[in-house]
Length: 328
Image (cartoon, rainbow, N blue to C red; front, side):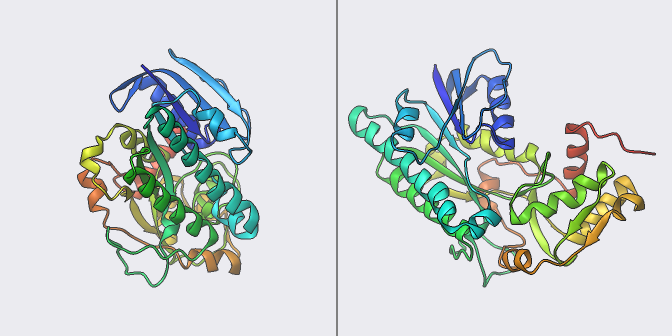
């Protein structure tokens, strides 16, 4: 029996992951008897057959990471981060949360390992922003990391730390580079990529949305459903099948903004599409233009990570999961 700790547990992915794990009851061959959700805000109550505890705090505060590790959770998901747009605007905050928080967590694990031999599975959510120009149209598993944003740099450093701490035997880490999550439910966030969701999410419920980039911008996507599948599988997969290269690009769906909009038209009609207003934003365009467009995620596919089948499937999943009633 064991505990699972989700750092960033009050976020959209953290809550969905918690519900999935509570329903599954086990991860990585370990039966779960406790689930701890840690975030800067209180996570809502989750009904589950196992004990669920919510804790609040700042991972970068002195002693915070040590306190989380004191119970020696068998598996740790590190999902907490300041998103791309905010990390670019606030340099100090981005490095404090995205880098210092990660380092504090890994160091707490290392110190506990040195005391007791503790060695948890650690799943680190990374990002496609670790890649930057010049890029091929389709990026393979051997592409060098060349981040061109502060957020991407912070995530790339996190990946290197995870690989080194795993190599030294302090933890059993796996980093997964998530595609842009689309359609992200709820309110818009400060991510530069947020418009990819908002140009679909808002029109589906009769609200206006702003498109800040050209319709020919192409990107790599996964639904929340697929992302939770990636995270669960990352916790389950055997260490000896991963090998020494511990950071993986997740499979996804490549689509242009124009193709997103056409999928919306097929589902919700011209009236929904008419709610999208094109207002170019040079700052967002500058960030997005450095991001990759498509991947050959062969390693992840061979290891059993399962993507969405199409962009239409991503749209259908959002409508079903959010119980959206489309007008006739």
